[in-house]
View (cartoon, rainbow, N blue to C red):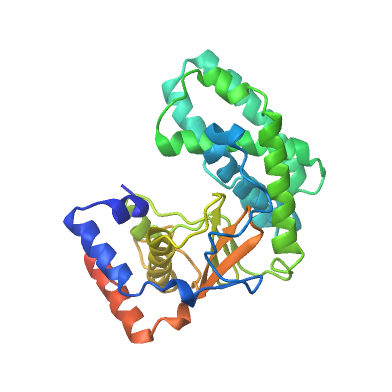
Length: 313
């Protein structure tokens, strides 16, 4: 399963986890926005409208713009190890391993050659040796396809064609528009200025393993971001619960990281002070400060999560 799956499941452990998270779940009116307008405004008009032509590429587009944003952040960070993390972010390599186990050698080798070619463009962009956005978009789409393939554990009908075909112009144009929106939202508002703490793929050690998978989109200086590329902006409790769940997990995981306990690996080193939904089609960010939750309620929820998953330290 996964945290997302547990929030939808009706087994006893999932029901208990939902009860815990709901005990500290913020209300709609407790969120605020980058623009100062109302959060979760479902009547707002998108800056980058959804193109119905791209319906079958919806999941690919969502993952691709997240990757492109991370490549940009990596390109502009001063930390060399973070550049490497940005280049290799996502699950493309896991997708390749999945294909290697399921395809013929011929098919896999042709796809792998295409990936190596595309990864070279990503590396050059992050290392500030190229500024070709068109190549970056095409490369991000391939990495996105590989990631979505391994997440679903399903092969497309014609894998070789799927992973080597040209990116449709409508998808390319949509991603270019979304990238411009990212620049407008994050760069023009100085969100990325003087960043010191970045995690391109936040996972929460033993707790992520306990729920069968829990990985957030992006962490920057205390804020945990979730990228949303949907045309809808309403308040959905499961989306809020997912980020609150990640925040509880990060609080526990960072405690373990600081203690440097034997047997605990991949623990998250940072505290989450704020959660945020980045609405890529609206150039908007919806924020909630974790400190708005009464400390005693948060500590009870944290203790109950530890008990539910038998986390001891």
